Amino acid sequence: MSTGSFHLALVGAPNSGKTSLFNALTGSRQKVANYPGVTVERKAGVFVTPAGRNVSLVDLPGTYSLRGRSPDEEITRDVVLGRFPGEALPDLMLCVVDATNLRLAFRLVLELKRTGRPMMVVLNMFDIAQRRGVSVDIDKLSAELGVPVVTSVAVRKAGTEELLRRTDEFAARTPQPAQDNTWKTLSIAELKGLQREADRIIAATIRLPEKPDSLTTRVDAVVLHPVAGLLILALILFVMFQAVFSWAQPLMQLLSDAFAALGQLVNDVLPPGLLQSFLQNGVISGVGSVLVFLPQIIIIFLFILLLEDFGYMARAAFLMDRIMGGAGLHGRAFIPLLSSFACAIPGIMATRVIDNRRDRLTTILVAPLMTCSARIPVYTLIISAFIPATQIWGWVNLQGLVMFGLYAVGIASALGVSFLIKFFMWRDYAPAPFMLELPDYKLPRLKSIALGVYTRAKMFLYRAGTTILSMMVLIWFLASFPQPPAGAEGPAINYSLAAMIGHALEPLLAPLGFNWQIAVALIPGMAAREVAVAALGTVYAIEGGKEAADQIGQVLATQWSLPTALSLLAWYIFAPQCASTLAVIRRETGSTKWMVVTFVYMFALAYLASLLTYNVARMF
Image (cartoon, rainbow, N blue to C red):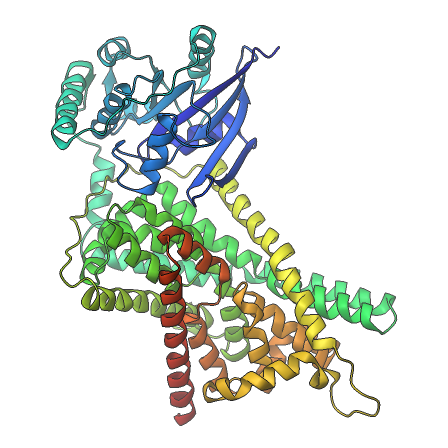
């Protein structure tokens, strides 16, 4: 029987295991959205305690302090203090602490305690700490901190039993906390005092092993080496892009055959006419030409989530700090930029972990240059059509090598643009020293990985069912109307609105080797880059019939020259064709100016790169 609703908030430093504990408690009963008025991600879920109490749980953004130096930290601070509009004041804070890395975490505990909020400390990953020889006097630690302390093994739901029991006890006797209007930001001297107190408590209650974890030390000696570490990072990225082509190909072929069969079914069942054309050439050919790339996008996300869960992401950021610092980027920018490989939107949102506004703004401006998953359908279509699927040195896929090269150019261009921003705009500014806490290596949690991949695949499918479908309906309409006049010769699409628009834009794009069909595809690509593939599928399907709908890559290989294909690849390395990304830039920077700056400089780079690529390719 339910005994009422109770509000919990998970607070803790990054990499403390908050997300694992959140997943263990809520399972599939969770929702991800944004906090009102900002693009900071909000994760909330519900669960029921053993006593039948309904509990709502919110996973607050990771923070090392309540000073509020970044948007993430500001959200956490305001929710804890009951100052965030529309967010319920937590009845109880669960401060999650990585039991293998205690020093900074205990300072945060003491800082949270000064707010006067009801709180419980959760020593997470306690089993790993015990295996490494860490011994904790729980009762003495609780007395020193002045708050209840429980242990947890978040990756196993059974490891949360004591936490749930203590939560029930706490809820039964704790009144609703009052809103705090007296808390003040601590000074540097006060924070140093809290750190000394945290060190004293650790010395009095915790016995650390005489020797540090040897496995982590041995692995770090290799992966953090200034030369070997960079080679390992490059190898990991290389393998990831080889896998995009090699592993995904069977599933992609299966999806392609399924959509081809569905299109044939529509062709056989329905009589020729507008309805048949709409379903076969607009919906199935358009949306299907994008959905076949879902396996490749899943592989990209799988690699990123595995590396993050294993503990390698922070080390990659550490390795790239010197290179990125030379280009005017803060070391913390590496993780947002790497996240932009999946999508520039979460990458731009992830810049909130960067404290300084100039560093954050620079990262936001270059994040769209990283090769996001929306470019994969475009790259794959053109590479498959024009680059032979041969093996180099007996094991390297040439198509995968070209894909790797496109990603490398995107990374190099982001570093180059960052250097120019630093040189021309903020020459007198020196980035703050890069300080990063390296988490211990942990085996990836398969349940969390699966949940993360599922969530991102669902977002892609939702995008395909909304934005891409609506764009395909528009493209089909433009490519189908008006109908050709009686006695007209040639394909019917030549008389359509799409052809009129494409021919009007063709003089502007002709120096790049683009025809009117490409011009038509670039317009809806403003909504989402991958829509360009669907638009090409629709245009060529209507122009060439069923054979073109099923074999769009072969059609392009016969109608485009190699310089045109290479030019379009160069265009998509830089093209700012994503309205959602531009909107997020405006929200994150709070200014339309930086959105316009991003669009203009990326458009200029795309045009110049395509112009140069096309003319050089023609020379050879």
